[in-house]
Length: 195
Image 1 (cartoon, rainbow, N blue to C red):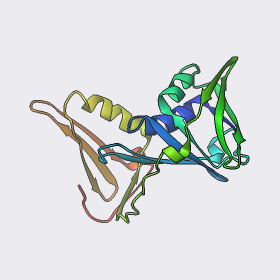
Image 2: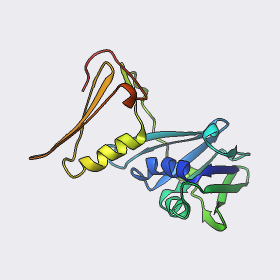
Image 3: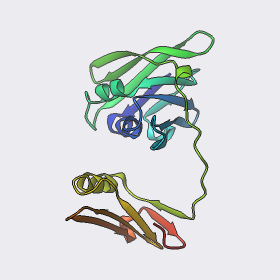
Image 4: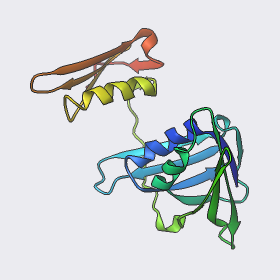
């Protein structure tokens, strides 16, 4: 297995899972890396795909899946900045083709990490939900809003109408609202008003 990526791309992929679980199973497919994670209370779930075309180089070789300690992966990725590349390699062992040790290289720093046995990690069943509403927004917009909303409320309401998406955080005395419409939305599709 050989993977090369911009550090910033892999940081995003890891952070999607890291807020929910400490360990994740990465499944290597010809078109990229996929994973799904659900927290122990079964409240939060994330499903992520890192497409091969988003990577600088991607060769899964004979490796099908492996387990990653996300805290360790985050530590390694902190060694680089957004301009750096990270190279991950591992050789499969045994008939199961499961790697045991991986090598993560950023610049002139190399870290060898023990990988987790994927058999010990479950991949949650992701429900297939057909929704009449579909909005795509930029991650940085949502991240800024949620960062500011943390000081106001523990929850956020999201309202959608035709080509408009509204996020609202209400506290006892303060309120924060973000309205995305027109060019603020990557895309949007909503037949009725939804909340």
